[in-house]
Amino acid sequence: MKAQPKASHFIDGDYVEDTAGTPFDSIYPATGEVIARLHAATPAIVEKAIASAKRAQKEWAAMSPTARGRILKRAAEIMRERNRALSELETLDTGKPIQETIIADPTSGADAFEFFGGIAAAGLNGDYIPLGQDFAFTKRVPLGVCVGIGAWNYPQQIACWKGAPALVCGNAMVFKPSENTPLGALKIAEILIEAGLPKGLYNVIQGDRSTGPLLVNHPDVAKVSLTGSVPTGKKVAGAAASDLKHVTMELGGKSPLIVFDDADLESAIGGAMLGNFYSTGQVCSNGTRVFVQKGIKDRFLSRLKERTEKILIGDPMDEATQLGPMVSKAQRDKVLDYIEKGKAEGATLLTGGGIPNDVSGEGTYIQPTVFADVTDEMTIAREEIFGPVMCVLDFDSEDEVIARGNATEFGLSGGVFTTDITRAHRVVDQLEAGTLWINTYNLAPVEIPFGGSKQSGFGRENSLAALEHYSELKTVYVSMGKVEAPY
Image 1 (spheres, rainbow, N blue to C red):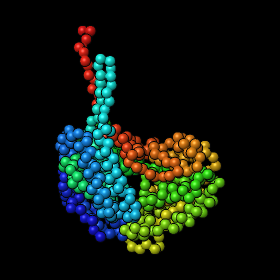
Image 2: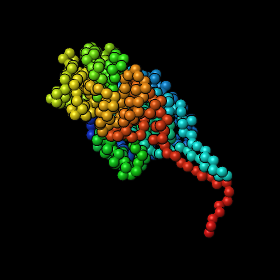
Image 3: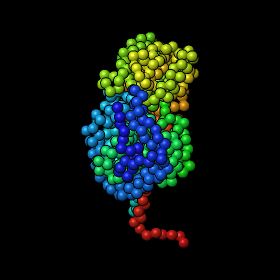
Image 4: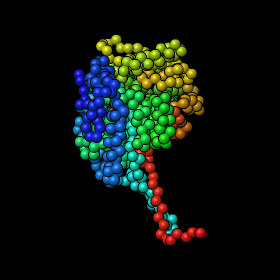
């Protein structure tokens, strides 16, 4: 099974190779097979990509938002026409089951191109401000060259979530995918050119953590948008701040998912499972601390165990498969280490906790795992695991669970399951997180803002709010009379 691209990078409308860059392999997580070999960007590749973006951006910014939006909407159409092929590539890139990628990955990227393409004409309007005889007006202007740094859990989606608002605002983008999932973004760049995007506006370069600083510190870069871990976010934000670059950070989480006694049990369990096991648990907004009120704890755990043990693990290309491998052996080893810490610190292993016996080969599979009787001070309740490990904690009162839910450095997401809608609103109003759900979990349509607070980052992806992070206001005061000066 091969997925070798024409070259490692996509710059100025075409594939570009530089074999002087450090070679690295793209691994299919289900088998351990090398499916592509690429080269990390050299400084010369970085310069070529940024120069291309800088040159193309001026002419692009001069186009009307409607004209820019038309190209993005065409890109969305092409992505939908090729959804199956893009989904299979995403599965090869990440190991996620095809039943997931075919509905959640390229489609959500296409949604971003369609949404931002559709709002281009109205979303970028300014204001008229009457000032008596005089007046002022504002206009949204592009920032220039933007850098996007992606994570490996949703590579195609992230490439589009960052690219769509950047482009519609009149910017150019240089996007660096994770070295674990290098393939999807190249296809996105290809499709944009096919849709009519001028060459140079969306460039993709490969690399690892050594490549990021070459982009972030470049004097011609005006904006950096990162999806990644908190430690990486701190480094990138610090480097960008030294040159006062615009920054958006979408980082990690340890989000609370609160289940009250009166919740619909099956819905709450389904939400908790989706919020912990979808994408093999590799989702930053996952509700990995599941607080269950004591009145339904036993019923919740019994049914959760039953449903979890029915999850079908297997070949990600089989549409019946519900759980695929983790993205890499290193990530699986990290998760297995957390599982051992959970057992050592006294949590009750309800189910899972190891490598499935019935999955052969070199695939990086892991069982969906549930710990019960977890307490707040345990390592698995404090640190982001980023794998299919659910921690179930119990609680007595509303005030107690709000305080405990907020007792974390993170603030990305949270959720509440209850049939008391008044209580639901009361609780989410007090949870310290950027994105919250009531009686569901992890839905993130492009129409709504997505992002975190506290150590989980700042700025927002998606919705009209994203336009504010890829443009800035220019204010113009217009005098209708003569200037009177006292000297």
